[in-house]
Image 1: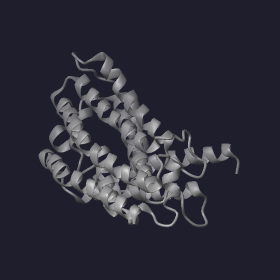
Image 2: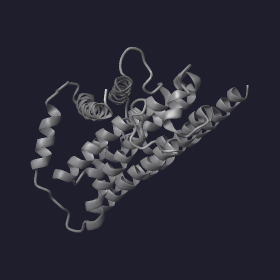
Image 3: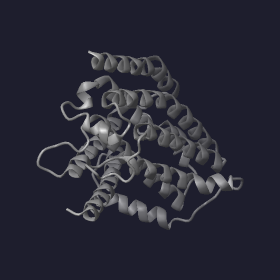
Image 4: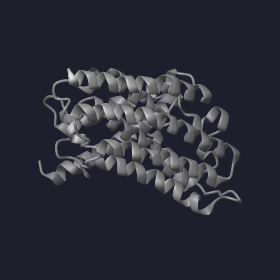
Length: 300
């Protein structure tokens, strides 16, 4: 198979995965599987008139959605979907994941500020507090995977799982990264920045038309991207029998994304103060324990 054809198939699979994520998100809210729902929502938002608040911040209002999408696309570009199927194979790829996702928080805060609305501003500050807190377990969990691979190349991290996937080698790190991934994608029960029940949409409560569409598409792409990161770091990446390597990455990513939406459907939203309390009291100490455990295993 030629590199061009492989790249085309990977892009097609990724777009298909984002669409399936949109279907699963609707299922998690309504309880019904509607394959045509995302298309109707897309056309509705695309055709809707854009309404701007009187005293909005013009610079942030225009740049926040673009930054949100751009950062996610940068993260996608460093994730390996198969052997040799990576756009940018960074020597610091493991740390770049966390560094790039930090700007998701920046984009959400910019959007909350730009609208000049109460609900949006509260949602923006919630995003700031939530993502700052859960960036710590992400960095520490990434550190443990790097320790095992003795490299920050994401391809090397996948190859290091040849004999045993990291989900079994360091289960504490996997649990911490998985929970932090839910917080980074602000999915239930961590959907405090956009809480419909109390903030009527939060960060994008007052957005309409194309800008809201960009944020909705960006969030779905973010879910699929973070799911792919879980697969690369803990589920053996492209490893699997019979099927092409990038197909295995795609299937594993879909399963992780489905689990994200399924968990949110059956769990109540966590209070914002409890969310931060659980992280600093339990998440960070467990992440340090995971690094210690992996270090001891490697030494022995």
